[in-house]
Length: 222
Ligand SMILES: *Cc1c(COP(=O)(O)O)cnc(C)c1O
Image (cartoon, rainbow, N blue to C red; front, side, top):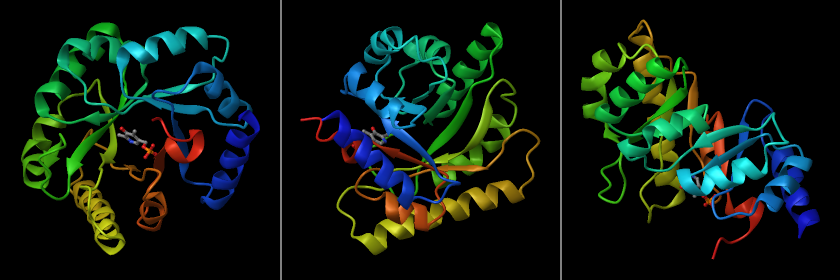
């Protein structure tokens, strides 16, 4: 099992451009499996539940150079824990949450790196800004100086074929470029967090800088 995790990591890592960060999604994965991935060179891990992450982070405290990424829907009563436990939050999905995170970050004296989660196509099953909502909220987001807004995260709706998925990822890249060209004083658009086990090759083709891979590294979560 452990050797297969490392084999999968090495093979996927070597298929990715070196500029693309490989984030191992370790939700529902044991601390031991995380250690195997760590041994194979992974230093970025993502979790989608605060509570579940906390116990694994405690178990893995002897691996101090792990960077933890939060990728789940974040309720505002968990915002403080999220900021304390995660230097990266990919799933900032509405203005109210962004404001709360900014306030908390200021109080805690930290400046988390965040991605804004955007729905390139309408999707009732996901949270996130629509494109027009996001564009309208940028002036406010630009004032949240304790957040380091680094880019956009997107997940295509399910049921799309490959060309449609590629199109979503391309549109996300173009949206980030458009925002970058508006020259905000604080918002940066250097990162595109896109691509999961089933579609990361398309995401990389479209310019992803971070892919979030779970199943393809660790096997089915069942
Ligand atoms: C679970 C999850 C992933 C990883 O999905 P896989 O299909 O297992 O690679 C990536 N991103 C988010 C936001 C997730 O919730």
